Image (cartoon, rainbow, N blue to C red; front, side):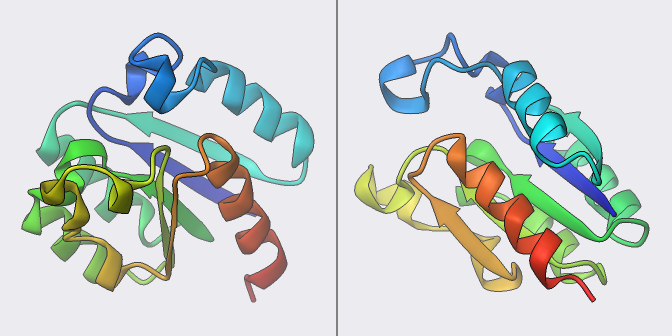
Length: 141
């Protein structure tokens, strides 16, 4: 099984950026944890602060993986193009957010991705990635 994890802007600073909101675990630590917890899964990890690069990666992985875990970061609320990329691929996408986007500023309650994703996990910190992997491991045909 192959799962792509695609993270958007500022998620490269996870663990040091606003730890009271996003936690103090780095994404490198999270990847190590996921790889040891799910040894039968081949993970592909990609992070970019650039919208077009995220779209390219979604399109690339949207036909060669068993699932995509996508945290579009701030582009969630602004990028119709990322939502369109999710709608254009054949693989299921789970949208993940570290913080509870519905409990934050009004503009963060808008997602151009959620309606096109298989599901949404929001507000559970890094645990959201683990739960998304568990979903794919137990539900992929």
